[in-house]
Amino acid sequence: MTLSKLKISMAFAVAACVAPLTHAQEVRGVNPADIDSRFDVIYKRVNLSPTGKTDIWTLKYDYKLNNQWGLNFELPVTSKLSVPGLSVSGNGDFFARARYIIPGANGMTYGLAFETVLDAASKNELGTGKHQLNVGALVVKPWSRGFLTAATLKQVTSVGGDSQRAKFSNTELRFIPVFILQDGWAVTGDLRQTWEHRSSQSWQRLELSLNKQFNVHWAGGIGISKDFDDKKDRSTLSVAAKYFF
Image (cartoon, rainbow, N blue to C red):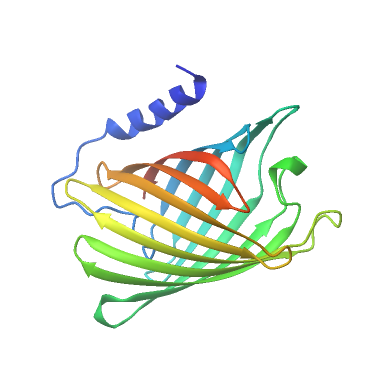
């Protein structure tokens, strides 16, 4: 067993050792409109095209201010890029977000997000070289107790940073179907379309994840994804352990 696979197995073993859910227990963290206080440890393996890989360990912290406001902080604490002729390790850029959720009629939920990204990567290859000021909008529609859909629109804009690195301005549209199953299981899809306005490039991402709520505090998830068109990879595997406060 490789070291990466061993770390993944250990993360799920910790979550699996806690007491099981009751049958009716809520699956937390799968509705994009949820505001929770939680701590995530996320491992991601990106298989690059045509060859190479990136291994990323990310720490993520969400803090619930009240039923409408939440904060989120995210840092890839260890990233390793391995391509022919180059191997680089270090931390990535730092993300900070504020979210505002607005309940609507007929179970609908709306939201706004404000995000700043700091050029904190320890190596040029592990970050964009630019700070960012980003804004987003969210709408969530529940169709039944076991199915909901969400759509998001996000504008990403680079601000300052390394003058030698290219500026960027991206618009991202996402559609997220969520299937909430029995016994704490949920399946989430993610279809993304991104347009990069300065370079006229565009790309798509397809992602599918399986989530499991072990008890009121512990949950885990595993996902696969792939980018297409102007931005390509061979595949991405992600595994997350989540602790809710």
